[in-house]
Length: 333
Image 1 (cartoon, rainbow, N blue to C red):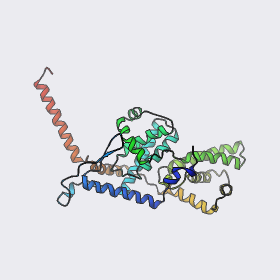
Image 2 (image 1 turned 45 degrees about the horizontal axis):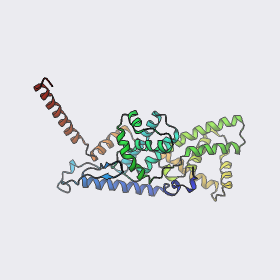
Image 3 (image 1 turned 90 degrees about the vertical axis):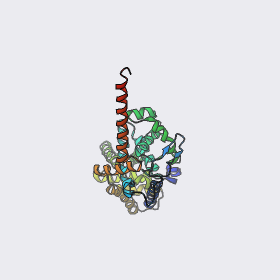
Image 4 (image 1 turned 180 degrees about the horizontal axis):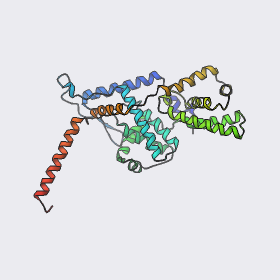
C-alpha cells in the first residue's frame, strides 16, 4: 500500500471544521431548492451513475397550500440521520462477521459520499449498503450483491444501481487509511521503545484494546475527515494510557517527534491530541423520538408522506376488492 503522505486521502479528504460545515450547508440548501422546484428530493439513479430528476411541479409558489408542502430537513437533522446509518453500517458488518478494516473503509466511504450529497437526495440506507459492498471489493473480501441483499432482506439490484454513483462521488479514491492499522504500528514501536518484558507486553495489549475502543467512538464523529489516521491513533493511545499507565507517553511522543524531525513541541502536539478526543464528547446520537420525527420529514421529502401512504393503501384495497369480486364472478378461475 502507498504511503499516507503521498496519498489522495491526505491530499483531498482531510478538511477543516469550517470546510465541513460549509459542505453540509451547501448540500442542505441544494436539496431544499430541489424540494421547492420538484416537490420531492428523490432522484432515480441508473446503473451507469446517471441521475434522472423528477418533473418540476406545477402548483408551486405562493398559491400552493403551505401546510401541504413537505418540510425539508435541517443541517443538524441530516447529521443525526447520517450518524444513525453509520451505526446501522456497523451492525450489518458485525452480522456478516466482516473484518474491522471493511467496516472502517465503508464508514469512511459513507462519510465522503455525504460530503457531496444531502441525505434528502439519496436514501442513506441504500448508500450504506453500497458502501459496504464497495469496501468488501477494495479490501479483497468480495461478497456478491445478492448475498449482501439477501442477508438483510434488501433488493440487491438497488446496491448495483447505486454502485457507480457512489464510486463517482468518491472520485474513485478507494484506498483509505483507517487508524486501526496505525495503532498496530505504534504498539510495535512502543514495545521496542520501552524494551517491554512479558508482563509489560500484556499491559500494552490491554492498552491497545482500550485504544481500539476509543477509535470506534471517534469513527462516528467528523474526526476521520479532519485528522490524519496516525494522529487519531495517537490520541486514542494517549487516552488509553491514561487508564492503564503503561508507558511515559510524553517521553514516547517526544521520541517520535525527534525521530521524524518535526517542529512541534510536545505540549503543542498534546493540544492537538486533546482536540481529537474532544470530538467524542461533542458527539450526539439521536434519540428514538428524534429519528421518528426526522424519518417522517424525510419520507415527506421523497413524496412518501402520510397522505400519499393513505392514497396508496386505498388504491391497494380497491384493487384487492376488485380482484375478489372478479374471482367471485368467475368461480372457475
